[in-house]
Every structure is written in C-alpha cells, then in structure tokens.
Length: 108
Image 1 (tube, helix red, strand yellow):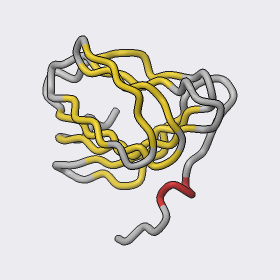
Image 2 (cartoon, one colour):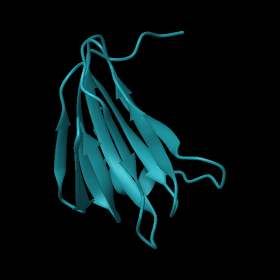
Image 3 (cartoon, helix red, strand yellow):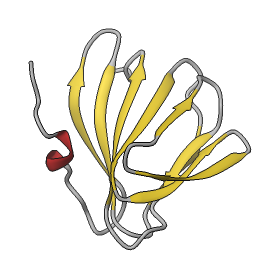
C-alpha cells in the first residue's frame, strides 16, 4: 500500500487530540496524531513499544523522560519503551505528527 501526502490525511476535533491510523501490521504501526492549538497527548509510557514522532506540520513541545523540547516540522523524536513521553501543541496553528511504533497496539 502507498499513501501519499499523509499530512493531508489529518483529522482534527475540537475536544481533544485525534488519532488517524495509516497502516497497522503484525510488527509496526503508523498513524497521525492531530492537535488543535492547546491540545495535548498527556505524558504516558508503553512498557514494550518504542515510538517515533515525526512532526509534519505546526509546532509544539515534546517530552521524553524528564526532557522537554520545542519541535516543529521536520523534527524527529524517539521515545524508547518504558520511558515517559507526550506531545503538546503550544503554537497557534494545528500540529500534525506522524507516529510510528512497534510492536503495534494490541487489537481490542
């Protein structure tokens, strides 16, 4: 499967950050996290999943462990398994982040 212009697939909601699944397999997951200004994905951990964030559009603040950093389009953030991580949109524009992690989440 080929998906072009993934940033254009972002879906934003007024209430909270929105997630869009792009691809999910047995070993890897890719999706979009879409933040309106002021929205966040509160810091959390995944015991057995490494995660990459690639900022596609907008700007925000990434947290990994005890470190925080301002991020913008083109920035890549790595959150190893078991390490606290989160993302906030502190900017005036929507924030679109490609999220890749493995293994993928368990199906409910």
